[in-house]
Length: 207
Image (tube, rainbow, N blue to C red; front, side, top):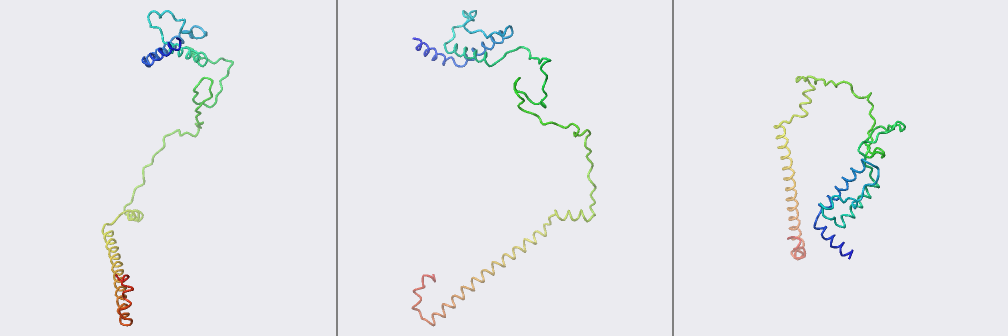
């Protein structure tokens, strides 16, 4: 019977969604804040709260279990106070060079690098104006020639490069034609010496 009731209550709890979960957590947090301000006793259990029993419906079994689990976690791991814990005179402060401390008793997680204030600039830096440029000086003319591009010179160099490339192509073509003509002359000379019988053996190479 207990297991059947637990299954039915868990199935209905899945339909309720996260609303009951949030309500349970909020109720636990409210009770914990109210009780920890008055005394250091553990947070009262949900079963002791009977004032709102008539107004609110009876919580599901899984809600009660989760409330108990959260209460145990709060009692063991959290310490709730309304005012910051002031360090007494008997506990001297330890200066560790500054940093960001995530928890009260934790070491600083992010430590800043020490800064030597004596080396910091005290005055604004003076930005001096640039030197004047003499357009008639040789230095300026050399700098100008190193970056200036002359369109006429570029076109002339392009024409020269084109002529050189065309000359190389014509020389290569003339050499190929001369080689072919020389081969034809050699074959004609062999025809006169050996006759036409040797031609069928090299006919496929001559195609």
